[in-house]
Length: 114
Length: 113
Image (cartoon, rainbow over all chains, first blue to last red; front, side, top):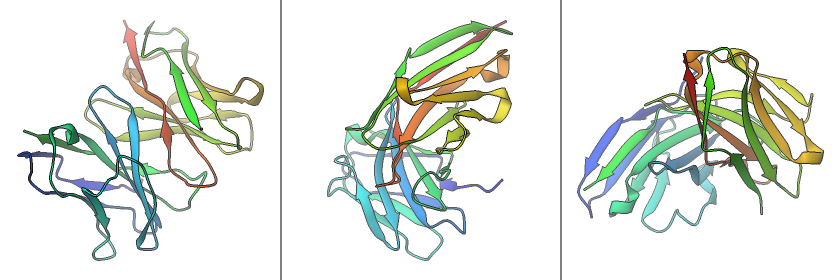
């Protein structure tokens, strides 16, 4: 079965530092997503990305966050100046189509801000 | 506003017993409905999905779910629990407009020997 790959699996960073979380979506997929899961809470949508631009973002996705598809294969989430409350598991997902299609999720990156 | 509610944050069953995990949704447009499973330290794996075909959907590992529009429900069942079913289960919904998934809060399933 095809896989979405995320690196690193665990990242520890100091408050105020920039972090970049990396994802390699499935190669023929067109829609890309980032979700996060704070420990003990539900999985929350952050942003969707299609045709090299953001198609939708949640209120969580403020100016501290940005996404990019720099080289046609990687899909990155950047947090410009991390806060303690950014500590969470971040999941990347991709799908072939916008609605009704299965979203494939990566294994997640656990971000710990200290 | 669209939302998903999973009743019971923790369900415990004995091995061999029926598994029933409840999910209700709120939506003003026809939804696509999904169940995902998350094993410890792993990502989200799709169990099954409803996309307006048959209302009874069969998934992997013996799980199935029935879409009941009148009850706005999409409960997940398995006739006989196995120890390997212990995991966190998430119900999710998406819509034509956006494609994003809206998740319920999750139900942790424990299976006792």
